[in-house]
Image (cartoon, rainbow, N blue to C red; front, side):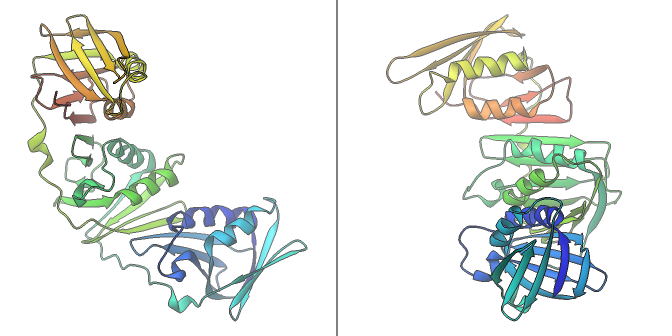
Length: 368
């Protein structure tokens, strides 16, 4: 295998695929990236951790010999990063090594045979559809605000993608809060409902890869595999096998006890109070007709008392939240005003906005 390619193109592709490479792997081959160049001057790069595969496709400048080999991913990226964007790198892989030549500099990296690299997952699709990147990433980013981390319940460590004839929806929960983000303008066109429980790592990688991009993505959902392709990049991930619970059962109806407040003012008040909260990050709400008093204390006796203007349709109530959890929920909205339904101090709280009807959150208050 021997070819020449622009260093900027190769660097960008390597930066993408090496995101899946962990610092420590049981199998050395998983620290490598598969380089596969064909007679049509197309170079395909692929890296995997067995659960997620990332692939990038780019054109080479000058092909002398097609072939495939695996090269240490992070080391190769470090070498390419040293080069100027306008320069070229020649890669010549023979035997058990690859020579990278950039200008007058050469770098020799040990290689492993392409035959030892794990095969790419087969996607026998049940649903194929195209979606705008901005729509897809908004759904994922919103749900990620309530996605669990390392929970013993597998379904909490990912995001549910749900396709029906009337909506495209994402749902995620960490056990204490839940996000439901719904797009009624994009459906996959099929008659049957299709769901996919996508692991947290894949969700975050998709957000990182496409959040600043425009265009369309092609999405395929199979029984155990999820595939997203666009802009010369492809992600294939195994799905979480655990079923996602019937999430609508835990969504409370709209309440008559409604708290309306300016979202930015509430975020500022939360942050001010949190400066004097203890390790539990607990903040207390004392809700009155025309304001919310946010209280926080420390074991040393420090106390924060922050008042935020608001409108409450009931007389008064008290409720407590974990600061970071409520902060993430408020950050997920992109509007001026939010609504909190506060029926009873011990009930779950419904959070939404008349100005952004695609988002709905449910959060459990802290029990006193």
